[in-house]
Image (cartoon, rainbow over all chains, first blue to last red; front, side, top):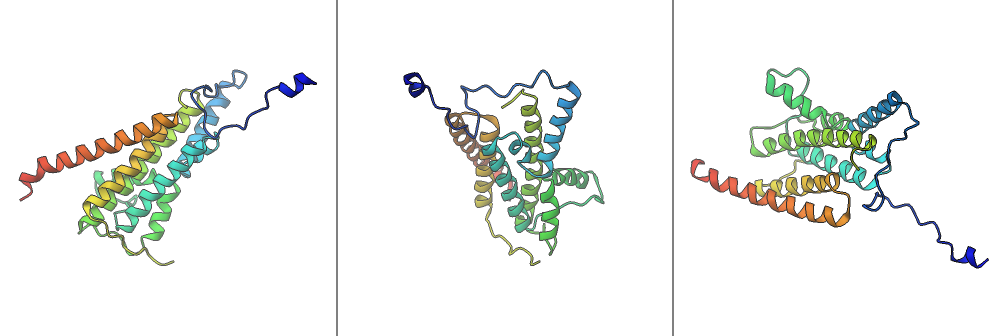
Length: 156
Length: 64
């Protein structure tokens, strides 16, 4: 009875793994192909909806920050009438811009829907907005790659 | 759906917002412990400011 009383109570699971708790190691029983597929699905999810790749791994803090950061950059970029590149760009720079913008996943569609009046890069505001949008995409690609690495147990 | 009301930020405000958001994201992605994150975010933000303002001064003589 006394032993029951002094037994340590299970603590609440923390939102983020701390330094004392090692990152979740890949399950050795899980087949390699299946594990690899799961990692790629998490990365794809993280690309489509910023932060989802981390949220599915219960890294709530990172998921929220990525979603908020990418969302803020896209919102600001579109509000400043930055250029949201399309697939039918005329030159290599347009193609690069399109690839960067596509990195924002679903926010790309949102930016195109919201920026009804079109881009205005004749002023510095629009130029800054273009950079904000491209940065949002590249940041989200980086986060998706991080989610992939975390799923493989290499980063946490 | 209505369009955005255009956001009016000057160069410095846009620069500060950019630095803050990117530093925050880098801090959360790059570090795990809260103390390390805060230190990394502040350091990254500081470097953004120093490098940005430094480059602006370097380019200033060629702006006219």
